[in-house]
Image (tube, rainbow, N blue to C red; front, side, top):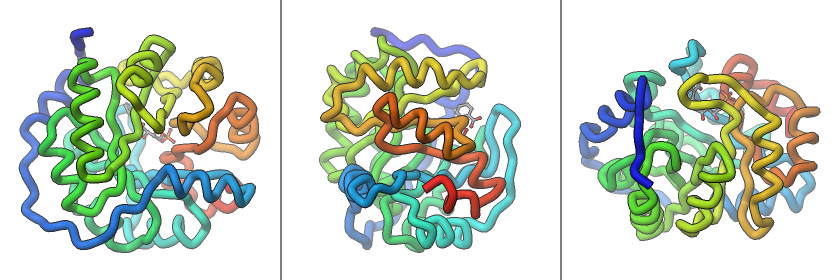
Length: 248
Ligand SMILES: O=C(O)c1ccccc1NCC(=O)[C@H](O)[C@H](O)COP(=O)(O)O
């Protein structure tokens, strides 16, 4: 299918094409996010991917030191850290990714609107262990090709979907870890019922991640009933990092 983008999504993708190449050489091993999630589940804990997000187009903003935040998340048992690197709409940066990936020894996900191989080169060189690939902004051919490109660096991408149609695309492309985003990328509305509906349709040999709008342990327990293996949480942990202890 050919992608058709409107509004801010069109702008964010256009901006992604002109992200610069970062001249760095990776100096750390790759940590598997999938293995880390399986291990935390075996320990009967909730695998939480804690996100470092300073701003978002839906109006979120938080000013927190990246090193302190990352250390606290690792100390508290987060399975991984997601770092927003998109600059125009999320006030992210490649510097945050480098700093955080060189602070912690748990998997780090580069959260961005990835549409080029150059962005994946940057993720690897800056120390990321995984990248996000969003089905909504890619053609099927691009998705397949970027998954393979990321794997050539041993980075297993988290493939983000919205609904059943995108689930089929992600599965056809061979995704091994799939995130269902409760937030509609255009309207920003959160719909956990859609997430539950889609989660239960993902085969159990695929790692299933519930993304966005998670604020409580009750929500996590509910999402687990529908098959969620891991939880990507940004806003509530950026506002109150100590909350991670009760969520895990
Ligand atoms: O965070 C946003 O407002 C947002 C708006 C539009 C597109 C993407 C957006 N966020 C990216 C994410 O996927 C979330 O940051 C992530 O899932 C964590 O969500 P939350 O816990 O609700 O901050």
